[in-house]
Amino acid sequence: MASRTHVRRFSRTERAIHWIHASAFFVLLASGLVLYLPALSTAVANRPLVKAIHIYTAVTWIVALALVILVGDRRGLRETLRELDGYDRDDRRWLMAQGAPQGRFNAGQKVNAALTAALAVLFTVSGFLLWYGERNTDFRWASTILLHDGLAILSVLLLSGHLYLALVHPTTRHSLHGMVRGSVRADWAARHHAKWRPEDATLKRKPTNEP
Image (cartoon, rainbow, N blue to C red):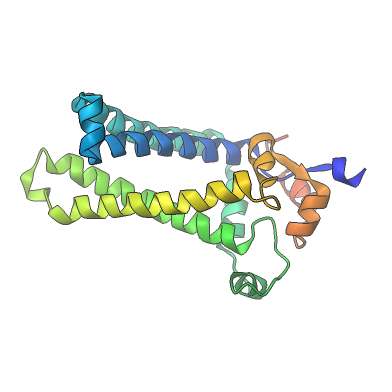
């Protein structure tokens, strides 16, 4: 019976932000590879169109995230940010592979969230400079394209680990259910997130518009 009991882990607002970010990233990665690799650029044979897709996807990503934050559960997001930003002794032990109980987010997920946020900001700034540098040569710097390309490589490495844990690794892939449906099995949560008390999260979020 316990294995069939599910507890809410992610709100609709959290899931919307995740999937908007993920969808935009894959479009940006695909279009960016076409622009970066000569063989792909030749095969597609419409570089201006791919470039437009890349730019407008980035703009749509920013606008969509802003809209979700504006109309979504901002109180819940603030609580989530506090959770992601809070590191304690157990988190440090977990990162040192010593084994330690974790909350709703383990230390690895906290690090991943911080890196993802930093990469998003750097991508936005460097991407804007690349776009603006084509219109004002005073802002055309060789280091900008090197930064943008380096961020892409780092993002692919981070994504590879994320996909492996979410889709392949037997003990962690159940977490994908939480990001798709919003809930995870209670027994899985107890094993992997022993410090997390789902009933407390439910009580905190009850006054919001989230179910």
